[in-house]
Length: 198
Length: 198
DNA sequence: GCCACGGTTGACAGTTACTGACAGAACTGT
DNA sequence: ACAGTTCTGTCAGTAACTGTCAACCGTGGC
Image (cartoon, rainbow over all chains, first blue to last red; front, side, top):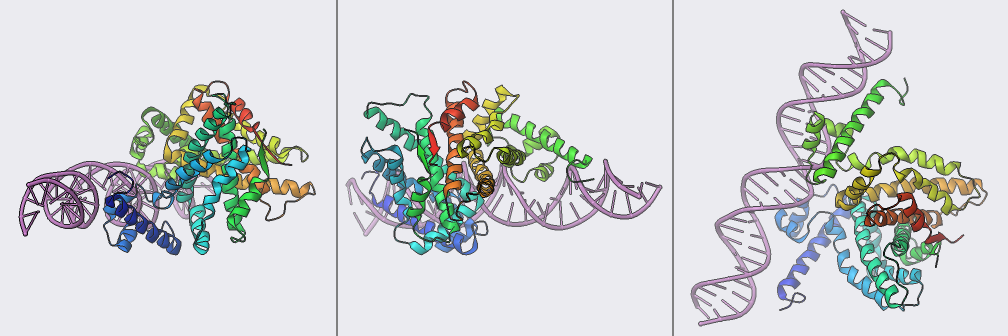
């Protein structure tokens, strides 16, 4: 039994998912701060202690699921052609954030995420961690293309930060517009206003 | 007696400053998480309750002082010529972050700020709040220059986010280099790698 | 069918960041 | 000196965590 697919691991993920969905409903319904861990535990019929066995922190119940998308994002980035402009490659990272499947809850989720101070802060920090991983891949990519960045060259980090900044700006703009149109279009518009100097 | 300069207000700021400095020393010395509010209160000889009368949260002891720089930043931005490229104007916002006067503590402060998860998250969120104010001024500026942004144009927010992203990237790069050179130079290098599409 | 075992769970106690209430001390303007 | 405001410490309470431990439960060996 490897780590990936044991029964234990599967049930664990199922429980985690169930807690996450119940918690998100409560957060959307009555607000993040007004929802206690005990409320969430009661909603899924377990003790507070057990909820903390599945999520390290309350914020993690919302932003923790982003960890799962990181390997996919990195794989996406690695699979892009080496000659493609960096900005284009970075834009492809954000396609998976376009929340396929639940159009009506996407807005409510975004609202809770961006408008709850504690959650928004946790989200921004998580994005920074993702950026660290992305920068590493960008460096790999430049190495393989025969044009490695100097170790102290801030370019990959700065360009990545600019792209993620555009992402957050797009999410804000999209929410402000009442979630009119697709989030993907909002990201496109935001990223069209800035570009790396090649 | 107006709000600005009464004796009460001055002593209040003095106490706030004293708490801030004592807390920062402790954070640098033994780490943010390992320092309790009671430790800080004891260091300045007051009760825990009183510390919370000067700072809303523990993170605020570190990032709260940024609030004071916001009006200055906005004034700086407003005083820039309207024809100046936005990117140049934004770069001028960051000059005041170059920490004049305390070169050796600047590195330690940055390290605590960027390497303590809770603090880093609070810092990123604070930067977002500053960005909101900056975006407003950019819109004012465009209005007065006779070329207003459309209400749903993500450009000012995206460009601002990109600039602040470069700032954070520069801070990371500067720290990673062991604080070699000035932070201002690091910001220049980071911002040189990206530019708005005019 | 039974038992040993690793992982899971709930109950409990403890720490820490915060908040509200209140009474007394200190300070301010007159 | 007095009245009103502000500051302060104390106390009690909430909520997010964390460690501990005994009971429980599904899996595999016999």
